Image (cartoon, rainbow, N blue to C red; front, side, top):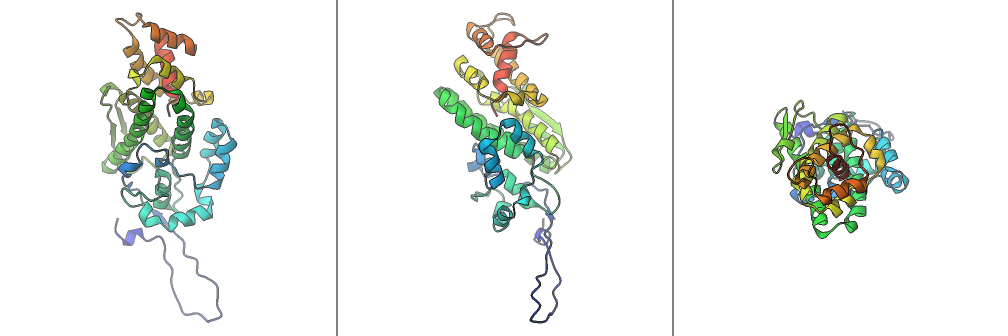
Length: 304
């Protein structure tokens, strides 16, 4: 994009009487679909998704349940907060620069500063499943995990965000989006999304992000964790989230791989530890799915 294309607005000037104090309004408009890469130093931090700058968001997250937050996020317009928009606009050049480390940078604010006056809204994933779940879930879960479990949580956070970066980068090049699982190639992600459009449709972006959860959890070493950590991971989250069909899919895919690694010999030869985890969670077995796979899939799903 040229410097001229980055101009946000314009107005005609003319000579007016000295007593004319009416200001000329300059409409701001830009729709920059080019997604610049995030700074490496920000990957793995919850602020990668969103910085809590809006009072409405801060007030809401202090009292609302996860179900309320999720519903509210789908209709919230962050551009309604004039004070925040002015603060971001004052630093716009820095916020839209590649690898920006500005204190207000996030995928959410970066999107806002690239889509001004063009009616595009940041994916609600950034503030709900991204920031809210990353921060709330991590804060509550980390003290309950073993040292290896804490290391896994850090690695999973990093991979969740680097996978998003990889997908956005692919979409800037063409229509094929590929996120590779290095440990489980069969759990890699392939999607076809019109070039430059991945971030613009909230449902498409949510599906993409959910699909990348599985390779992130598994590549971070989920199957290597002791059963005690898997139980703590699985019993931490909000039950309401299970109403979302896409969370069931990514949970099941993760659980299938972990279940296989916890199985000794054949499908029915379940290790004592894995069986204990299944019983502790109280798995509800679907037709054709072993108890350990179903239980562990439930454990996996909440790791957002």
